[in-house]
Image (tube, rainbow, N blue to C red; front, top):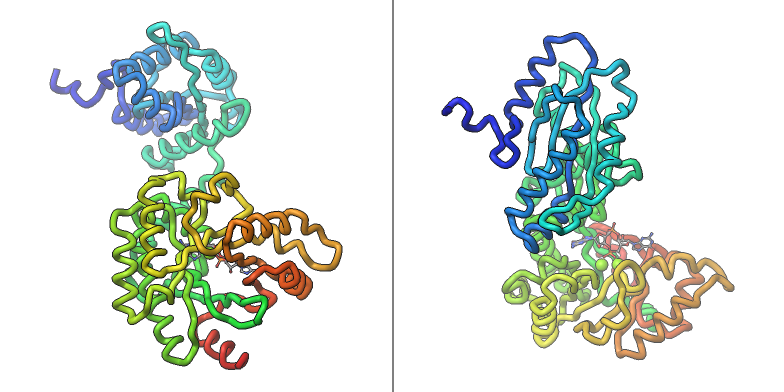
Length: 428
Ligand code: C2E
Ligand code: MG
Ligand code: MG
């Protein structure tokens, strides 16, 4: 009996992942082509929702009901392995390992119908992944690849997909970026900040700069913040990353001010930061340590954040504003922007998204939405900053429309601190 422990799944009674790996090792002895097939019953989100609403016993019944349906489709002598909570795997001898076997499509089609558990009909999001078996590939890697294929298959109508190196490469890159980020934050030579001037469109003076992260990875080269910040936001790394930016940007602003430039530095914060307990205290403390007043800094955030822990986020923004920090709502007019939310948002500045500004190249270009957003924002008492000013026309037009501030390649690109100092000196 003891020898069996750890080799069978207790819910389904099937041989488990350990046995599947051994099975793959045995397959390596054979010379005939085989396909690995992995059937994943649903995604983690749906599973968690079911777990919350219906409980563990229900979810276990679901897995067993799914197995019964699966076993009706496979040959009686076919071994099915239970390789993870929601996944079954099997191998199929085939003539052509590049062709989708009819069984794969039959399984995907069969799971298109609801499963009924305790009189409750459940529609699951099955995925069927396929991978030609290659004895050179380690079993753990083969299992990972066929799971990736099964996840990818949910994005296509047939719900059956072969492993695709290209989509996987993107995932592997994301994983690599996250794995390497802690070292980048700890080391002093990979991350840096560039500063982009923000101009008062009515006076033409530069009164503020936005701090923008740059990462020069020792092997991958420059990685855009638009790529690595959203990844970091999915993990706890966003906390030390924002703290790194905060400390650098503040120390640098002290140097700008000592050099005679009375600037405000604008720092981008992430949703997770504003949901962190005590974020505002840490920020104000850092500000004090850097020898700055709270009104020497501004915090930018995007509205998407208000979806998570709204109460705490709003309380922290209120606290910061009371202390004198300016708060800016970034990228307004794209993505999640919600007009009915606007009156609840504690912000001083509203930054109009580039997508509304960049198309303005010459007289007659469509500015309808831009004008409406500007009117609403100003009507509600926000100071407005237009992002993505790339042409002389956009600059002049926004000034005429009464937009207070602007930022864009037409005036200046983001640049390292020493170049910004030269740029500022040249304007005086
Ligand atoms: P964002 O905060 O909206 O920053 C403005 C982005 O627009 C910057 O891209 C800037 O270089 C770019 N930009 C400015 N003017 C123009 C223009 O005239 N034309 C065009 N085409 N682009 C312009 P960047 O530096 O690549 O940053 C992208 C995004 O990454 C930022 O958008 C922000 O959401 C995020 N990000 C950057 N640094 C940080 C950071 O320190 N913390 C966090 N949480 N996010 C950051
Ligand atoms: Mg920003
Ligand atoms: Mg923006």
